[in-house]
Image (cartoon, rainbow, N blue to C red):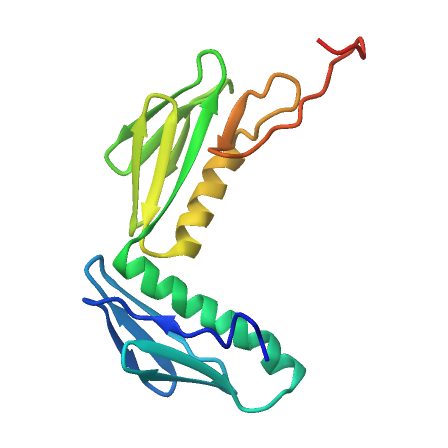
Length: 179
């Protein structure tokens, strides 16, 4: 039995779950999300909990069991609380501006980089910290990764865009001595 898959997903108050044979829709205060059901995986609602079960102990179904439970948990958490990731910009002269639905980054390249913010994602900027937030965990992570990829942190001075808690392992430089 999957350790993650056998845990029930607790549905908080204010969240409605609609289970159909091919899709599960979750509605909450922040919005609505849906997820297709995987073949061989059954989802049922008992009181304020979602129970995920599988048909048999086939290897493929065992791997999908925990995945389906995690996806449903992300849907419930997203429509009730939402998700956010923070990015820090480090570097002399590195700036970021938010102009409507366009994020304008000046990160040491020969030109300013513009990033179009997709629908369903909110971005706020405070000094050198970019906060990416939304209800879809996968989309929030993807947008944060795309912004980070514009200028990844380099190991010598640590300049670039990094996640808030990311640790950059530093290199000593040409001389090989520690500074």
